[in-house]
Image (cartoon, rainbow, N blue to C red; front, side):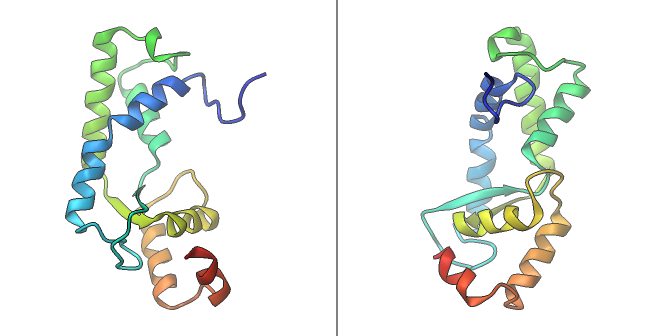
Length: 143
């Protein structure tokens, strides 16, 4: 039986592609001085939020390159993988990454979901956070 997280038979490719975003994540952390964009805190649990979902970026790259989703990374040639990684890196350079404390990131996705996320959603979330829309109990649960 397939894992419920299995997405189009490209799980092993996803792992490699996510690993390839480390430089983008590092540049984002430096840009924000290792602070959460919502709380302003420096923290050890920062995660980089994609203002366009990783899955959407991956799928755009595969479509642009006219590559079908394949079962494993090994099902692509080295040249194909090089093109995929290169184009995904370019895609990441075109979007904004936002460092968020882990629990803030979880809350964002609990409210807005995990697909088709946008910068506008993040800006709305930040405004709502700043307006203290999220109740005190929720804030206590976060930290």
